[in-house]
Length: 227
Image (cartoon, rainbow, N blue to C red; front, side, top):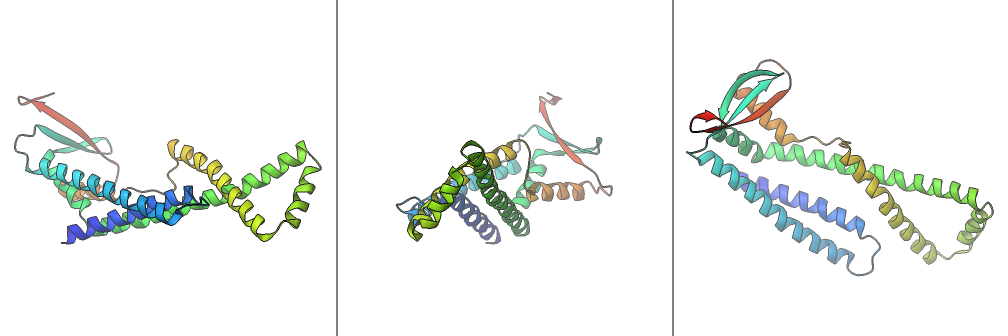
């Protein structure tokens, strides 16, 4: 029951995050912002549930396998510590995957990452507005004053519509930049708590007292010989 509860928490939380992202990208569109977000969350929940179940099933199959010829070599700071069977490694991975505490730490980390990314996006919109104003002032010195006067004369509804459009443009401009930052390695504070938990279990398995970087290498054997 505890395992099912943990999976449910992870599914709902990840679906909510993905639904929020989709909602932000569709902000200001006419039909069914709420309806589309609900559909997106349902689809995301189903997809995430299928992926999580598939991953758990693969781990279970590896644990129960009696014919696996795969082993894993473990090294600490570049020094070989020992080897473990694939079933043992899969058992550690599944234990971390099903641990409610690990799921809680990972969700909290994802929340902090989301807030950090949102902060970058929100900061990028005023910066874009500033540089657009500078560019406009350089190219058309009198147009900036005209724009300010038009804004002063505009009614509240027009200002609201213009603000929504500007925010959409800002999001379209800053979101790709944020994506590029992710691709070049900027992690926004992301930490893989599942990997950390697996490595801690490996430390306990081999009774490692020293601190350092743990590396795991896959060894495949064919007819008893290392492939």
